[in-house]
Length: 338
Ligand SMILES: NC(=O)c1ccc[n+]([C@@H]2O[C@H](COP(=O)([O-])OP(=O)(O)OC[C@H]3O[C@@H](n4cnc5c(N)ncnc54)[C@H](O)[C@@H]3O)[C@@H](O)[C@H]2O)c1
Image (cartoon, rainbow, N blue to C red; front, side):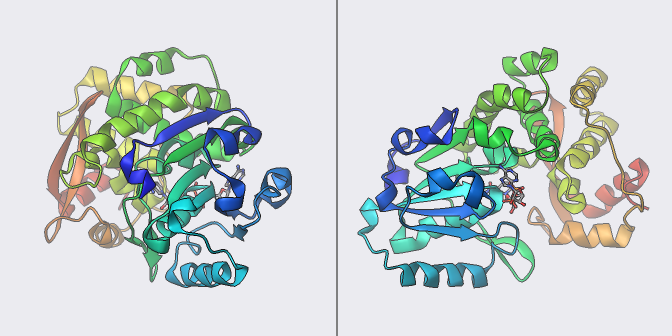
């Protein structure tokens, strides 16, 4: 399979017109799976692809039913080429990337994959590292493969058109990877005077490289090293807000005296500088609901425990197996649960 033989290429492009040549994709040999919101705004680009399939993004796309109906659509389209000639292009946010990536990994036993992420979240995080996924019966990411793209194309004009809400969500991912990595680029991030999407574009490359540095050491999550990328996820997933999960993990690390005052303050001021503030839900979670949510999370380890990622310093995370009761007690202390 082509994408297994070489390290994935990440391209930083200013506009969509650069895509086919820079990603070495022949539109006539491609299956383009795209978020239908681009039907009009990217009509010119789409018109080059004879085999293109609009999908509705979101968690309902990542189901076995929608996967199976997509396979039938493709089969009815008359597309048929040898596997080695085919490229799947995934154009959309993380849900489209997870779905199309999974499809590419199993279609004809694996064909070339190009990611064209259109949300900042996907551009910083989900399009890199090779995880693909479908949900089963409401449980997220139960079926999936590790299937890195041959090429990931980050297109500034698309990302910049995605709106303020997406920018704020992506700041959480940017801060997460900055704190985990702690490299020199983080000093530049702290002193940057840029805002919004200009700031995200400037720090996209070091953020992606920082994630890939970790992924390369544990590409299939076999050694546990890749788990540091879950920093902030434990409560973040329960609250569906990575930024809030980061506040919880930072405070928990500080409370346990793993994280020194100076580094804690540094992380908090980095978040504040980006306008990120703790925002507990109006109605705190009940201890019972939080316990249930934590125990169904995929980071569950042994009965009653989960792997929690603590921060010791910028660039230094520590994984520990923690009884869920301790996490719930800390969430109550911090006011996230009652
Ligand atoms: N594979 C991984 O490593 C990984 C990592 C993190 C998250 N994920 C997955 O990613 C998904 C969440 O990511 P997401 O928020 O990008 O998903 P998404 O695809 O659901 O997109 C979110 C929304 O943004 C819209 N959108 C997409 N591009 C846009 C643009 N340029 N302008 C305006 N709106 C746009 C979509 O139509 C959708 O309504 C989840 O399914 C999650 O499980 C995967």
